[in-house]
Image (cartoon, rainbow, N blue to C red):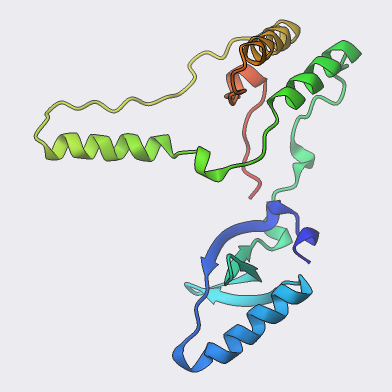
Length: 187
């Protein structure tokens, strides 16, 4: 069952299509997987590297999700997670309230690859002959230490104002400089 695989194991998705002589086998496998709500596990070789893969049905097509082997997943044990930090009940309640007020159903079409769009626009400007086009790199310089309670209160007030105006709650951009976290690859 796909629910038994933690998302940390997923790498890439590939659409699978049958060869002309494999149409019936493809349909049988697709229907069997769909009707049993199961997945198939396989070992495949991609570019001379053996990988683990899950075969499942998506949008009435068989897809192969390549998976990392357990030894390829970095252990979180070496991370500094602030185990001695005390969270106040009021802070937790405000954080939960903020999360709940900003929660919406996931719509993948709502999100755009802004970097890709900027690169395409840059290329278009260069094709049109514009010279001296600069690329702006967005990196936080000196991350500021923030007052967590003040940030939570400000966020809640912002959400309340939007809700009072009848507006749609927008998304909140969380970056290492405003969330007190850093990103680390799991693999």
